[in-house]
Image: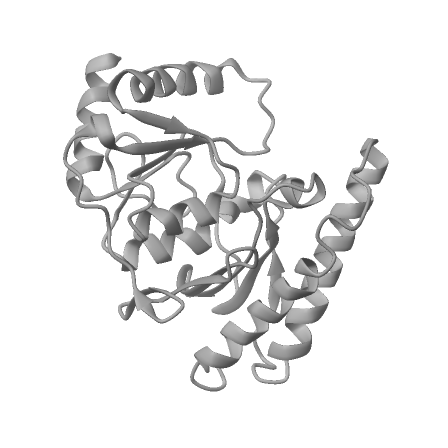
Length: 270
C-alpha cells in the first residue's frame, strides 16, 4: 500500500507545472525533418516531463516507483506491472502534434493500484483544462463534475476512431478496422480522428465526444482517460461488447445506450 494517502492537490499541481514547462516552448523549435531529429525530440520530451514530475512527487510519495508507458511496446501493455502501486506516465500524449506546432497534446499521469487505475490526470495546457478522476469518487474538469452527453440520435453524435503505434503488418488489423470505420461513417453523423487518445476519452466523460472506438491494443495511451470516462458514467467495453480489462485488444467508450447502439449497428454491418 502507499506510504500515505494521496494528496490530490499536490499531484494536480505537479502535472500542471509539467504542462506549463512545455507551453512556454510551444512552437519555438523547428519541426523535426528526419527520423533522427524526431526520435531525439521525443526523448527530450520524455526526459523533461519525467524530471519535472519526479521532482515534485517523489519527495511526497518516495515509495511509489515510476513506469514509463512506451506505446510502441505491444507486449508490455498486455499486463500491468508487478508493483502494487506505481505511477504510469505517458510523458506527452500527442507529442507529434506538439512537435508539428499544432494543438492536441496533453500531460497524462495515472496511479495504478493492484493492476487497475485508481487516480488519473490529463492536463491540456493550451485550454488550461485539467481532467482528473479518483476511483469511486467521480471525475472532474478543473473543479466541475463531468457529465456525459444526453444525445440519443446517432445523426447528431460525434464519434471518433483511433489506432496505435504497434506493428500493422498483419492483415488482421485492417480486417478489423475497415468494417468499424465503415459502420461509424454510415451510422453516425460526425466521425473524426483527433490524436490524443486520453483527452478524447476525457471528452467522452465531459459530453464533448459521444463515442470512442479503437480496434487495436493501446493500453498506455488509454489508461488515464479510461478512469476519467468511467467515473463520469461511461461504459468501458471492448468492441465485441464485453467488459474491457487490461490487455483487451480494442476499446469502446460511450454512454451505455450509445455503446449498445454502436455494437448493434456494427454487428449488423458485419
